[in-house]
Image (cartoon, rainbow, N blue to C red; front, side, top):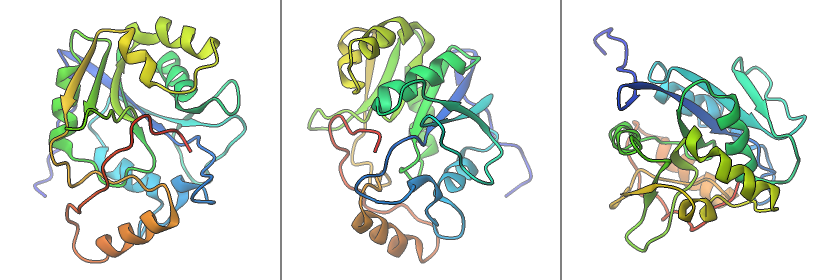
Length: 219
């Protein structure tokens, strides 16, 4: 560490907001994933430490009425409970002060800054930039959304849609290949969490992650 501040992300020439999605019900994990020890700090704090200083603002998307004790960040609540990631992203886009808004789910413990940089750059001139696997599966909860996507997203949410996947065909969407992405892990179950803790027990390193699921929800 040389004492220099991290370089802030830019989409084109403009600053970028970040929304961390922490509003799921964690049905499979049976615990609030944002607060899981990871291993020496809550999972959401681990994510924040990796991106600290790189965004113009950071917002935490939470379910209606949910609190995250000890987290001194601006919270954005869902207006309607149980509406999944589409509602969390919608509310984040409404609240963000910048046109480009990166979204990261709170159950992704390791962030590849080089990939995130590429994703944000790819969003310039588009409504959405979303990673895609070699199998054609999207990772919508590690993506960049423009406020220009908000009208289409609001129509989807009003229609009862909880997933973000249908949004991509309605907007100027740019897909960004994930490649092998061994760093990408989604902690959805106790088994996922146990594997992560084992991989994090030694010096920090990129581990082999599970392939992201198509249409992964906020849970």
